[in-house]
Length: 288
Picture 1 (tube, helix red, strand yellow):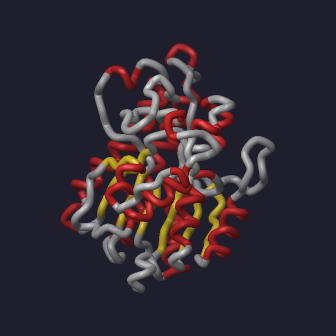
Picture 2: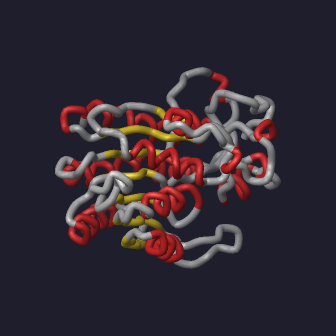
């Protein structure tokens, strides 16, 4: 492994990743020459959701990585099991799992259809559990093995539950996967951590689900990609069971200028993400 490319030769399997934060994480890691298997359903572009599994694979290859696009549904047990085996067969093993796939619906409880509740929990919580479960035997053989899940710090403060209880349950379920696996796999040296953004991130979900016009109140996905990279190069036996916030990770890594992550606005105009405490110049009244 090159000291300047600490992920060189490693293999990542990621749920989602056809666009947004997942794609950014994959492309950032690809600069080290990693292998990336993407599990996603998107094969054709959507009018409001640009990007497909194939465009993401092309971006990974262009950045210097090796991509394996695997088209399927993270809710499908047989597909996920097969995808893990295909990834290990193609690249000789698996070193990193990134649980990125997530569904969002911000309806209040009485307005949330149960099929949507089930969808969110099946993709977010169950999907993270399922992909991690099948990858564990390979991670035990991996180099500096990590499971990284894009989910928030766990808190029981009622203020986080007053708007979208169904979505909160689905995202906190992902965080419980991190908490449980970090302890289950501690003796195996497999790290399990979560990463969450401090502020809104300019993704299709923010633009189309959370609310239009938030672009300049958001940061670029590259901040999450850079933070994920810093976590994944940490020694897996030393850093596990943590719930990281993107700018905290980068500050610890020595980053002092966050203006490169601005998406056209100002630092004091950034909207805080769900479940994120204010830090720095952000206006706490601006929140997703």
